[in-house]
Amino acid sequence: MYSKNLHRFAILTAIFVVFLIGVGASVTSTGSGDAVPDWPLSYGTLFPRMVGGVFYEHGHRMVAGTVGILIMILMIWLLSSKQPRYVKILGVVAFVSVSLQATIGGLRVLVVSNPKIQDMVIGIFSIAHVEPIRIGIAIIHATLAEIVLCMTFLISLFTSKAWENFKAERIDVSLKIAKLYTLTFAFALIQVLLGALVRHTQAGDVIPDFPLSFGKVIPPFNNLPYESNAPFPISYAELQFKVAIHFAHRVWAFVVAGVGIYASILVIKRNVKLLKKLAKVWIGLIGVQILLGAFVVWTKLEVLITVLHVATGASILGMTLILSVLGWRVVNSAVAENNELVLSNSKV
Image 1 (tube, helix red, strand yellow):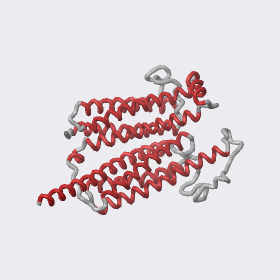
Image 2: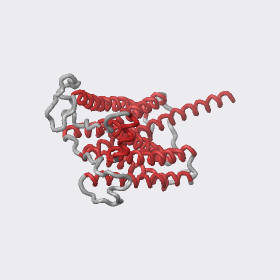
Image 3: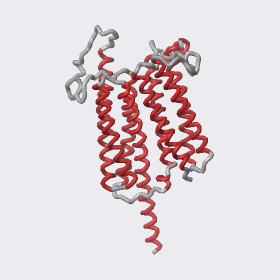
Image 4: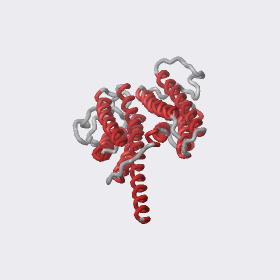
């Protein structure tokens, strides 16, 4: 079933998905989400002038289109291959998810720029403004991006020679490791969605210092610095909300790191070959991610740093999923070995 070319193409597709997520972060970081008012065309053409915010927004669309084509090719390749059925299903899920993501991305644009769609949304949800809906659509868009990412990472794993030839040594804490990595994956997914909420509510720079928050361990929610005469003032309640989600994103990062590092240390100590290598990479990525998060604050949301932070976070999510799947395969191998041993003893 192993195909070197298929596996390499799957890896290429996964890399492009990570790149797409990073490019998407450049759109929010530069405030270019509404630079192009129409969709699926950009100012009525496929090739608008790439200036200002159009460079980021239309560039994002071009990368997204490339990813969509790659995933479509991957799905067709998988369906016509001798890969197991579950791998083929992952290919279909990836294609459906990226198609939905593109459609919802277009809706995110039109709900702001198209008066008819605005009126329809306002009428359906009985709201005064479409901003909450815009944020909600953006979060769904980001969630689908992570689903596409996870599908491509899994396909890369399942089409690899390492997966086909995987032989797990039986270790006494295999179930614990599998559960810990599964928990870490769930926590990492929450963290990615928290990060998306921070970006789309423009709360990335609401806390100006790091590792402290306004000079304290916990932000002084009842005594936050508030400028009522700012050029674009917000209510104090909105400021508290932005500080809360930003702080939650920071705290949750250390929860993810703590659980994942503990699981990785268990793997490294037991010397499970493939898992050990990936666990070391995971720990390295976590260290880089925390450092990038600090620089995002220190550089006041410098675009390149923010893009790298988002792309690294996506990579960590995909790596955690792979480690979780491999952890459960270790468990299944141990169970199968134990069943064979029991069967052998019963025959004797």
